[in-house]
Image 1 (cartoon, one colour):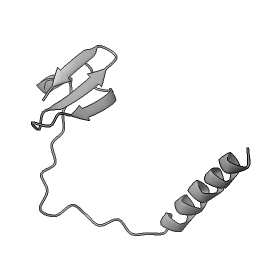
Image 2: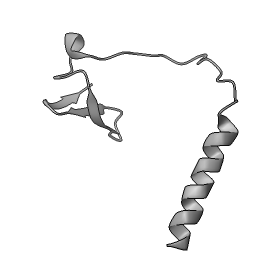
Image 3: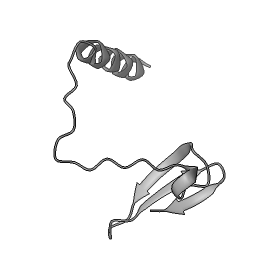
Length: 67
């Protein structure tokens, strides 16, 4: 039980220390948005995995979509 409490304390400490941090915008990266209009069976993703050849697999409650 003490390991659980220690990990919970450390996670809370990390959140508090990052609360005031300024987030840098993404530079030099592509940002894509996927939804049901362009390939996903549903707009809410439940799981994301990437294969070794680079494909993304997105799991939703309505099915699985390779992108």
